[in-house]
Image (cartoon, rainbow, N blue to C red; front, side, top):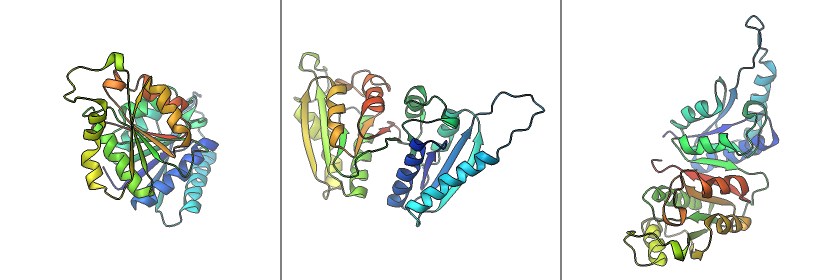
Length: 269
C-alpha cells in the first residue's frame, strides 16, 4: 500500500464530510489525499456529448474543501468513468485507507449504506472508513475483538489509529455463552481478549486500553457502544461472537446503524 488516502466524492453533504475526515486522516499519516469522483456514464444517444464541466467543478470544490480543512496536505483530484465499487477497489490497491460517506447521490446514486458500502468493505485491498456526519470528535475507539486470525489486522489498525489520534481504546469481545465456539484454544473469553490484544498493547504502551467481555448479541452490544465512540473498528471476517461474519450480520449492522464512523479492516490488509 502507498502513502495515500483515497476518498470518494459525489457532491453530497455526506461525501463532503467524508472529504474533511479523509483530509484529517491524511494529515495524521503524513500522506497525500486523492479525491475521486466515479463517473457512472448516463444512458444517452451515442452522438450526444457528455458535458463534464459541472462534474469537474464538483471534484475541484471537494478538493478545495480538503485543502481548507488541512492546508498542509497535498491533494490531487480525478474523475474516473466506471462502476463505483470497481473503480474504488482499484484505487484501494495503492492506498492505506479508503474513505466514503454514509450516504450519497450522483456518482454514488443509491449508496444508502447498502450494497455499495458493503461491497467496498468486502473487496477493498485496504481498510475502508465509512464516515458518518456528526460522528464524535472525542471519545474512545471501539475495537471489536473476536480472536480470529483475520481479526488481528483490525486490532493492529485500531492501535495505530489510536496512537495517531491520541485516543483510548475500548476493546470489546461479545459472546453468547450458550453458543461458545469449540476448539478456540483458549479457556475463557477474558483470556481470548487478552491474547488478541497482547502484541499490539506491548508495541503501543502509550495507548490506554479498556477491556470488556459482554454477553449478548454482538450487533446490539456494539451499536450501543458506538454511541460515545469516535470510531468503531471491525474485521471483515470473524468467528465466535462474530460467527459467519463475511460482511454479514455484525458488520452490516454497524455500517447501517452505528452512531459513529466505522472502519472495516480486511484480513489481508
